[in-house]
Amino acid sequence: MALDNNGYPDDESLEAIRTWDLSKKHVTELLELVCENWQYGEAAYNLTGKRVLKLELHTYGWSGNEDVIDALHHNFIFWSMYWVKHVRGGHYYFRIQLKEGL
Image (cartoon, rainbow, N blue to C red; front, side, top):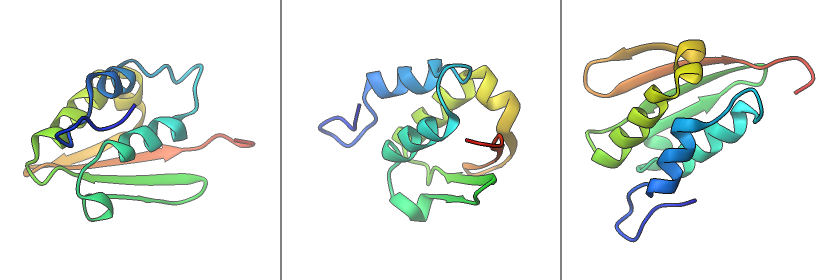
């Protein structure tokens, strides 16, 4: 899964984000996929923490990043468990509490 020839997230990546099963796959693998498909690199996303991860995603109005956010939003379990807030202008904040031993 990767970006397509135009630098947009490919359909396979977006579908994987949308349907990621957190009961079978670890959330950190999903976060890696999201970050791989996010344009503008670390200027547009920030992932910090060890036991509690804090993820900030900033779309910069780019439609590819908006597509990734849309896919995450349609992943009901991820969004309901980890979404903290979003701010007008494409700024999204998540807090991920990792389980002990993972």
